Length: 411
Image 1 (cartoon, rainbow, N blue to C red):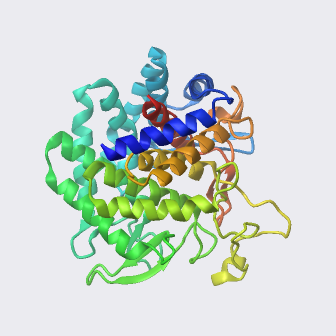
Image 2 (image 1 turned 180 degrees about the vertical axis):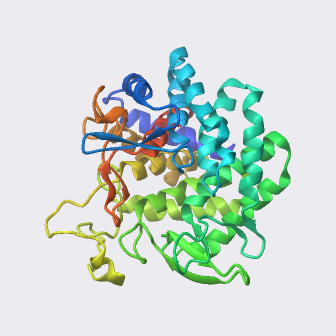
């Protein structure tokens, strides 16, 4: 009861402070209208065996069904349906969700949680159609099978890189929700046990003293000992890659909300307190909090990063809308979980700020532009020069999710 009162008081303060701005109801309708137009355009050009990935240099780049992002476009359609009740969008959501019906025919990885929970999970949540359940159950079993009791974590990648034995990335926190959902649906307590142990091991090994996190921890699969730690997609191993921090915030807020384990709430609060002071005035983070050009920049020669990241003095550092969208959704969840009234107010205020910024002309596409994507200005992997300052399908998904969650909270 205390936590509910905390959220209500915090939200009341935010709503009063923003009374002179566009109402969130109006913003939601505006964004959903744009999303409807964009996604109808996207669907009309998509091949039957593909899903959207990004839009680069005036051309769409699609993914195959086994790509880790393949569940986000169906999930985005489901969120637009949830926000509008548009039956045509529902038809497109069903159509694109069923594209993944053969997903288990491919070699699977930890991101099967992203793929299935965002698509089939939302489909079942919004329709109650039990035809979606068998794939959900089978995919959760496949995900749980990747857990090692020796390591205490679900394996992320299948040794795709030399010198990596049993990699676990912070992104993996997001896939645990699929296990928790499927335990509730099918009564597999092992799913929750695996999710909780993975989250606890990750607290032990993924976080630094300042509560930022590494991207990857590699374990010895025989002993369970940590072999090494690195940040694959950030500026350097010791930097704070912003989307990695977003995954951590969202993952631990979700884990507490679903399990009520206070250890996860404590970790989510620590991550939030680390992130909040580092965010830009408009709430959208730099692609890495320590990249050159940021207030907390690390030296260019940090761990050989100068050999990988090309940056010229005075060049604006890239923002990452995808990280901002994930954070907004995570902040909303944490605001309704924490009993710290000041932190709850700060989280919901930041979430609203991030949503408003992403809904502005700077980030929100106009209908017919941006290759059918909703948001501009995300960063996939700057190290490899891929998907830099472009739209990304998961940015759209978590932006829409944040709007839906905010409106539910405000009611």
